[in-house]
Amino acid sequence: MEFYLGGGSEAKIRQKLIENGYIDTIIGLPAGIFFRTGIATIIMVLRKNRINRDIQFIDASKLFTKDSSTNRMEASHIRKIVDTYINKLDVEKFAKVVSYEQIKENDFNLNISRYIDSFEKEDFHDLYASLHGGIPNSEINKFKLLWDSMPNLKQSLIKPIDNQYSDFIDKNNIYQNIIEHNDTKIYLQKYTDIVNNLNEFLSSKLTNLQSIKNINIENLADEFDNFFFNHAAEIKIVDKYDLYQQAINIFKTIKNDLYAILANIEQKNNSYDNVLDNDFIGKKYFTDEWNQISALKADIEEKTSRIKEIEPDKKAKDTLTEEEQNELKQLQSEEKALKTNLKTLERNFDDKKASKISTLNETQFIELLHMKWSEALSKSILDKGNDIVNNEIAKLEKLAQKYDVTLSQINDQIKDNENELIQMLKELEGDEYDMKGINELINLLGKNNEK
Image (cartoon, rainbow, N blue to C red; front, side):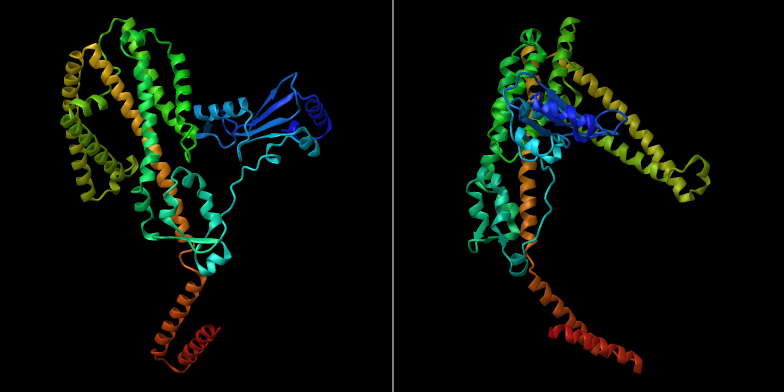
């Protein structure tokens, strides 16, 4: 990092590059994205023949997913960086194009934090609202994206007190009032529309086995990306790149399925067993058997967990009580029996699945394939929409509680508690010194109430 902050020869090189307009963009990456090093790194984009000397700064230090001992950047993170860079966007707390003059005023310092404030502001308490109740309109206005997305929601939740303060109409039923509101249903329908559009896209591209054989899967992935962003841009509140990650996670499965189908075609293998997984086929055609298998697996997991709890270390077998030894033997016996039963059920299920799949014609297979993808897309994207709404509800409920009890009410409660304690103390009996101590405490509490 010396080049970006240091003096001496580094400062001279840095200044020369900036004055000549060679530095186009600086992108700060998350720490720990490279194996065995936690050092934060940057990407510096250099370009000649630029028309100005402005520099774009992108703070992508928070764009990562924790993955064991390292941090991993997802496809959505990279897409967000690329889109921001290509379009030279200014994004609050993330990206900013800084003029040459401002950089010069900062002694040609290229530290990203000098130009982008990505720190989250601490929550504060409004003094007037803390004393008198109500909620500052400035805090209600922080939900602007919510109010813009659901234009009739605010007036059904919030009532004005004066020009500066408002309050909730019904603090106890915020969740119910939002979930049942028509604007919420309209908002969530937009996520359903995205799913429907993506399904139509896939259906139009992959109509039969021949179309799958002819498709370029990587080109399809690019088309899928572009199609998604063309249809997701209008949904507010949610970060479209977070929503994109939900879709692209499912598309990874779609790609794997397509490659598996191509391999089957090449090998002249007419079985679709490696594409239509057990969970999908089980829920679709063999509900009872699949529920039995799922329940059995849960039972085995429960037994195994309990065995691990009471099973001693090899060196400490004699530490078990007789009761624990008996329980352990019983659990191990039951676990063994369950596993045997599970193998039988799974064998029978595999036979039924193979038999069912062998009867499918091409049209039925394609229909099931799209159904599998559609269900996965629906769950992922619709769950994200519900998460967004529930998160906004949680924040509103927290805001409602923030000023629900005023300092004056707290003070009154303290006085009531002190008076109650005084009455209880007056009923106590003791020797001379005990009573002197009790009377002094009564005196102190009484003086507090007089203030």
